[in-house]
View 1 (cartoon, one colour):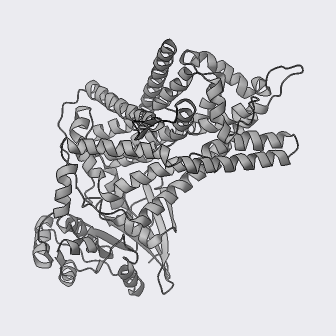
View 2 (tube, one colour):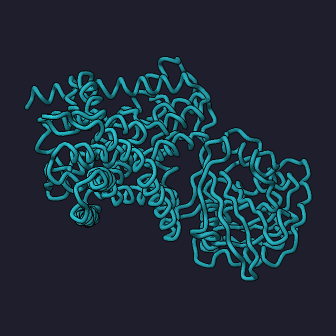
Length: 612
């Protein structure tokens, strides 16, 4: 054991077995999210304390269908279980989580893990769903045949892991599982099912009834489109009261601080730099959380694999497969986990194509830019009494990213002359009600990630931009705002020559530079620049009004078109380099994204000028 009082446990299991829900049930908020050393695969580690006071460390490993690794995710799980992962201690105990409603698939993986000879426990999860379907499991017989403890759990229900905690707390030092025989695993699974499991039917009647509509080639696609449209309407409509509250709070605090300080560099830093910059980004937290809420609900409900199945034919024609859908959907939140999620794609060509087009998905970092410009230039009025004009524009921007990704992947397929067939084999999990606890934990994690970016990356870049915008000071007799004579002002005026054909002024050009680190920094940069350019009250809630008066509609639409393709996110490019191990791929991605962004912005700006 790793210590006399602590047990290090690894959770393993097939995807969709409820493993992460069980992890959340056990650890609650006492968890941290990071990446494996040298590998861009998310790892979750948490801790919990049993009633006896005994402490446990819990590691949530990537979902795997087999230890005969065919994807990078499965390779990570195999290496950790064998103690071969650099910087990762060998687990004292492996808890293999299996879906009790689908043991035909999951028991095969259980037998593979058992062959490793590690101390092991089987957690039969989703036992409540199994009982509702009339599935009976002779746990003692299954335990006898496997030779390991078998525990029932319901990860989505409060107290659903109590029996597992009691077992871990009362058991002594875990004994290694006896290695399995080398017989055919499928034959062993069939024998166990015949002896220990009674199942009225292989699939749920409710699932089959819902799937007749959800997987219909016409109604299913219409439903998917309606769901996505509703999400983007909600992002604008639901978040507005919360955003107004944050705007009012930030504006009041900023005004109070500015009034309390004498005229000085410190007052300029706090008022123009921090409140003019960070406050501008902070107000978009409600919209980001609403977007994440819907993504988590779709993930928890079991709908996402079905959406992947629906879109497989269309995505295949564009050079992708249905397996690319979930990584690309993850990229709506952030391209980084989206690119990381491509590790589940076995075909290296499909994986590379998905990595290259993932940045085209409209990530949440673009949302502050989109919201700022849409609110400033698109009227907030109803359409047909049902829809919101601003929500429709946001939906169109998201669709533009999706269509662009499909177009680029189609071109890549033609360039590499790929005519091979790629069959889609994917498990469709049972439908289930999303667990409120898992949704809450997921939203809390995302809120912390956003706030951490605000207080680290965005704060650092905002302070740096304030410094560049302040020094050197204006010469004697200067007539322009001080920022025009600063380093940032000079850089902006130089870049203006490059971006003038697409309608960008020098303030936008300044904002693009720190925006290379993170797209949402562009909004805080604009707040800082306009606050220091003499615009009255250009902080948080006022920035939209300032640009609405100073920019043309052509410039605003051009910037929106730019951000559909904009490659400005150094973290995404760094992850792309780590995942592909190729600077050439990074250079190609940067070049084509920049070229598309400039071309789209140029056409948008010039056409809008002609029409208006």
